[in-house]
Image (tube, rainbow, N blue to C red; front, top):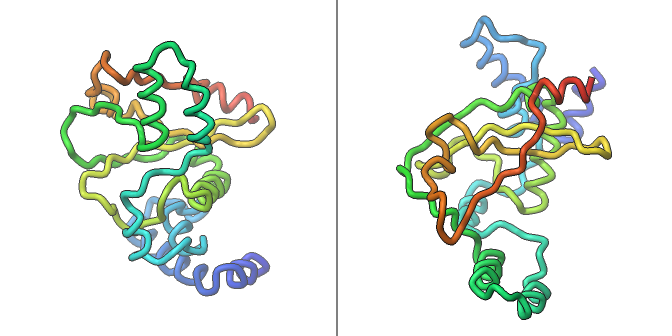
Length: 205
């Protein structure tokens, strides 16, 4: 009862809408577990929206926010020996980096990584923080772009016991963004490697 009152206080009738939609979803999936939280429904109904749908769509093609100070960056790059890379960095942080994607413009979908399923509330909290900081846009009830490619997300624990939100950009195997980006050229993609999920389980108990 305490959880219901708290949910009603924070999100008005969001908890009621979540309950109704969750029960509807479970009626269509009898084998599903009633003990889990549906992250999509939770984001839609339990998290206060950052803005209305029309406002979200107006900002759909806006460039993402960066903490990099462009003026300071330009000053430091003034003495950078490689002028081609200097220009690439300056333009990239100012207007956005192009990854030279040359593949088909088709939509993909995916389930999240195991770590995101295990730590549902932590994942939802990280997504909410990213929305508040202007780094991502949403949530959307359906795909706002017809050719949107969805990558699985997960969590990796930081040394300070916090969480880092990651995207599995090498999914699906053989048909991911990096697989159709040129190996050489003005942009070279390098990803950070994280421990495997088994290692993560050991580290978080």
